[in-house]
Image (cartoon, rainbow, N blue to C red; front, top):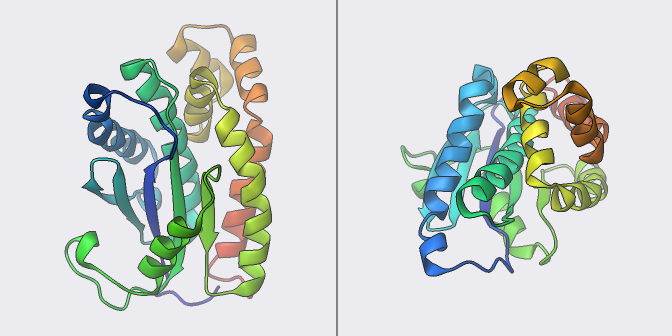
Amino acid sequence: MTNKAHYAVIAGELAPGTRVSDEQFSKIPDLIRASFQAVNRLVPEEGKLKYEIIRMDEFLALSESPAHSMRSVIMLFSAFRFLSYKELTERLELRVCEGIGPIEFAQDHLRESDGTAFRKASDGIGKMKRNQRISIATPVKALNEEFALTCSFMDILIHSWSDEQAEAMFLNLTGKNQMEISQLLGISQPAVNRRLKAGHFDTVRKFINRFEQLLNPESQI
């Protein structure tokens, strides 16, 4: 995609079917916020996500560099998984639709902005099936067809993560090696390796790398 005016807009929410008490639900906005903060602290500038909590369990986010957005989105999934378990001892999940395209009507607040990327994200999340966790919508049919396939595999992986696997995945995606992760988590390097393998980190990395390749500004797809 060669248009430099393209952005990535992420519409997200707590995955449907989640059963939490009113007290637990009241903590969801802070958990979403903490997840974004964890991502933004550890990614390079081009990977940072501007975000707004729209309602208790809904949010919008914006990346000015679509090619660098997916690593941050996967980190967001993993951060929310392990942070919510630590806080609530519940296995909670997010789901998101990432819309790629121009933003014809940009405002200071994301919730007041509009344009192709916003509409693709909001329309896309509204069309997601109950068991879907991630979808991607672009202006290019060939890209959408490939992303529909690869996202179906990512749905399975994201849904299967334990909180321990999610935490190891998050740290791995920041660029830390297994020994560094083992020191941070207070476990052995082989234990880190087992968590990453169980979370299918090789497949996750391939998904991110393929996304970055297709969304590279110099790509002609």
